[in-house]
Length: 169
Image (cartoon, rainbow, N blue to C red; front, side, top):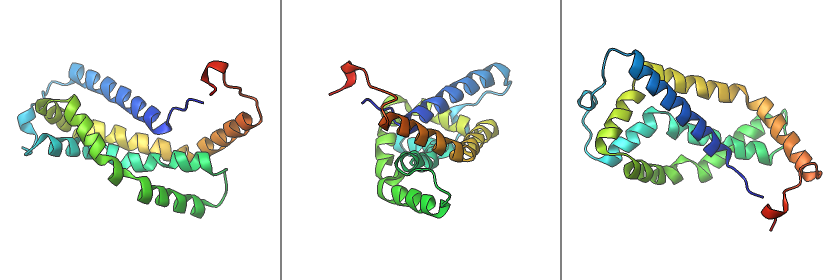
């Protein structure tokens, strides 16, 4: 069965929100952000790392590993176990192992000037508040998400959802 990784879906939602906020801020802001307003950084890689950090992507990657825990472990009141499992996932498969791929992707996708602009935008208080609100909403919805995922998985295993023939191997 084809699976969409929850982290990728949330990253897509974040990017859509970010684009919307950027478009709105360009229309309503009388102050233009110029790349030279951002601290000079030596390389595109340094800029990419700064963008990932300032946008919260680096922190959220580890947070979103919790989806893997939520799918693998049925809902439980034992939050200590869930916290331990989350820490284990972060330690064994977390941001430290994947950061270079993200940096390379940003370097490939954006010019140095664009990375400077992204960094300037990421440092704006409105974007910081958006990132923080998204993290808080994700954390606040953890219990409901766990129940929904568990119910979905139980239904799938019970045959309620049957993959169409073209996706079965």
